[in-house]
Image (tube, rainbow, N blue to C red):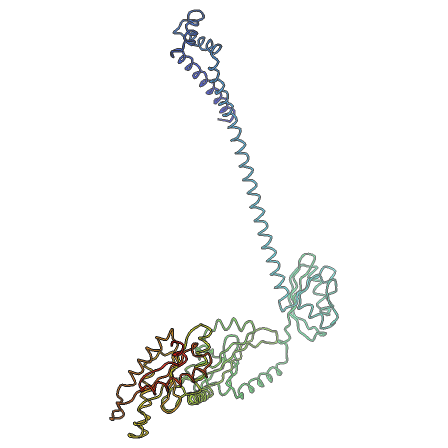
Length: 546
């Protein structure tokens, strides 16, 4: 069903619906108790009725009669006409919408086609650029000449070849092929290729360049592409090659370092006399033409990764790598570098190794000796605690950290009570034993981050990071209790040993190390004067509290 038929059908249905609505409303008015409508109905049926009240003609006449006298009945036909017009217009809007949708689809298809064309164009440009880069980077000389034998395109290798005969050449555009390679034989072959259109390959000797060149010629319609590869190394005197090989072999074998020359497949070409020793191999084992990866499977590791690096001309290796060679732990420096033939192609690898085991062991011994010397320089020889020098460094560091972090530090000065009696009555050896045990007990009273030091004799110091005065009091009480415990000195008991403690606080008692040490020392003497085996804070703080 086409659009016109659908529209006509909708119009007919609208007319029918309007007529039924008018007739229904006219009949409804006849039944309603409205005085004017009732009078009009009676007038019609008595004076104007056609065909009787029960006939279709009578009812149609009644509707027309009422339309001429009751104006409100015209609202129904007007709404019917308006509805049909809207229906007709909606069909037009649908067609317009469908038409616009088709236009939108066509525009979208064109846009996608344009985007694909741009994408393919970009890919083509990238491909052309990569081909140009490959054309420029290839070691062979590439040339494109026209039918007049003039050069139209060339790469860097071709320019370098031309500059060997004339260093002032800066472009090859339009120049004859003889400006790059001046050989009558080559020019004759070029004429043949242009004539018969067949690919030609051959070698010739470029006397002016003192080179042998392998040449390809590819016909390209009215132009010819020419590729020149240097194969001079293949035409060298055989005796010279033998002499060179013997020289290289002698140099490698007599090397004082373990060294091996390998081909690109990791097969041995030359090895020095020390190679077997450092690799842990039997002295008489033949290695020539054997694959190094089979002889020493795990050295080096990650061969594929190394090959990628070597292919780019990189030197690879390790310094002081620990390994196990023939059951012996060794430390090796090893390096591998690529070597290239006369044509610039990868020929293989030069593998050098140096046994650093003794050198590393000696360096470790020296480092350990230096560490022991440093320990003696900064530690008390009897107790192992930090000495006065290290104590001063630690105190300055603690004060600097507290200054940055707005923290607090407590400095303890301790002097043993009863030590002189042990030293005099039992002897100096027992006195030393007592000092060692006191040092151990003091370390149990503080944290690992705190510092316990011995300044000399029976004087000790402690550096504490604290939150408030109460922290210092708790540590002092713990120290007094711990030091008062009896000491077992190789069977002899020392039970009358205690300590007097002076405490100075940063920043209340001072900001400098020297001030704090002086005030803590004064507080310690105050503790001794107060009966010993007790602790006292700096008198400055006591005065402030008072």
